[in-house]
Image (cartoon, rainbow, N blue to C red; front, side, top):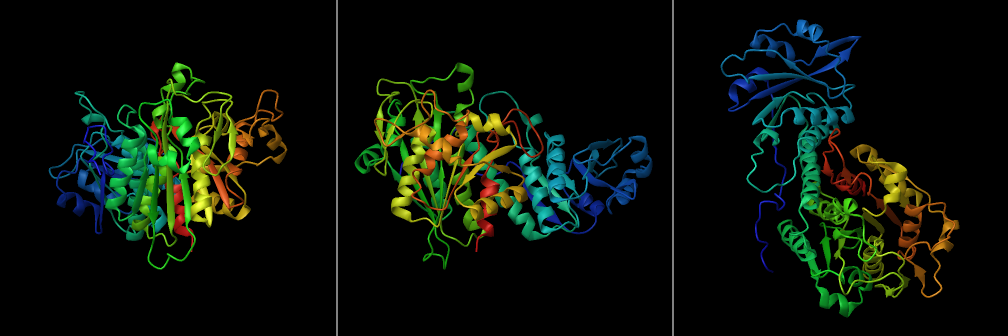
Length: 514
C-alpha cells in the first residue's frame, strides 16, 4: 500500500485536547498541577438560590474572594453554559483565570452543553482544571468529555497565520468523582466525531477518493480491522455502475471500501452493515450547482467519514455485534466523460436507473453500496448515512436528521440513541403513494421524480423511496444528515463547519445491541 504523504491539513488522528481525571480537592489539584492556567467551578440553582459545587468555597478562599458576594454582584443565574469570570489576582501557584460555569439542571445534556461553553471560553489556554461533572453518573461524565472536546474543536489548518489564540485547550483535568467508564466512553465518542470532522474538513484538492480510501486502510489496519479497497478496474469488472457513472467525469477515479469488525464470539451472527455516502467533492456534474452552493461540498463525504469513524471505535467501546462498513467514494465533477441527464445506468444489483439530474449523485453511489450489502453480506440490519437532500434540511433545519426506516423497532432504537447522544433525528414517512413518481418509461426506475410528478415537493421522501428499492426487504434505515452535517455557527458541542453528526448516534446504537 502506498503511504499517505503527511500534510498539515490531514486528519490529526485524535482530539486536540487530552483528558485526565483525579480525585481529591480542587485546591490540592491546582497546587500540584504544572501549567494550569484556568480553573472552573460549576454552579447550579438550589432552593431558589445559586450555589457553587462542594469545591467552590475552598477555591474562593484560596483566591481570597467571597464567593457568595461574587454570585450576587455578578448576578449569576447558573443557566446552562453561562460562563462568569471571577475577578481575582491569582496567588502564586494558582491559575490566573477563575470562572464559574452554569450547569442548569445537571442532566447529561446540560453538562455536555456547559462543558462545550467552557471549552470555547478556554480557547488559547494550555491546561484547564475543573470540577464540572463531579458526583454525576457515568452518563454525566461522558457528556462532560464529549462537550469539552467537541465544543473547543477547530479544523485542521495550513499556512503561516498563527492560530494559538483560537486553539482548543491542550489539556483538561477533571477533579472529583467522575466514573471511569463514562470518561472512557466520552473519549471514544469524541475521538470518533473529531475524526469525522477532520476528514470532512480536509480540502478536496487533497481528498480524492483514493486518498480517502487509503486513509480508511491505514486507520483500519491500526485498529485491527479488515479492509479491502476496489479500484476503478475492479469496480468495472464487478459491475459497480452507479459509482462508476458518478465518478466518470473526474480526473480522480472512484473507489469502494469494505471494512469488517468481527468481535470475539460474534462471527456466527449476521453483520450490521453501515453504508456511508462518500462524494469527496460535488460540483453537481453536468447539472452543475451555483457557485455558492459548491463552497461546502468538500463535506459531501461526511456520511462515509461518520461510518468510518464509527467502525474504528467499535473495538474500543466493545461493540458485541459484527459490523461492516461500506464506503462508495467518488468525486462528482464536470468532464468530457460525465454522465448525463437521460442516461440509463445499471447499478450493482442489475437495476437500471434513468438519470434525470446528475446532482442527485449520492443515491446512485448508495444504490451500489446497498446492492453489494444485500448480495454479499445478508445483513441483519442495514443503515445508510448521507448528506443526501436539501429537502431534508429545508424541512427539518440544522438540528435534526431525517430518519426513514422500514421497521418500527429499528427506527425506535435509533431514535433512543439519538436522544442519548444529543444527535437528534426526526422520523419521516415512507409515503408509498409517492412511489409511482419514480416509474420510468425506459428503465426499471427513475433516479428522482420527473416533471409534473405529484409528490408535493417531498424530495427527501422520494430519495428514501429510491434507496429502499435496493434493500431487498432487509431491515433498513436511512439517515439524511444534510441539515445537521454542516453548521453555520458554533452551538453547544457543535462547531461551525463539518459537525461529524452521526458518529456518536451510531456508536450509542451499536453499544446497545446485544
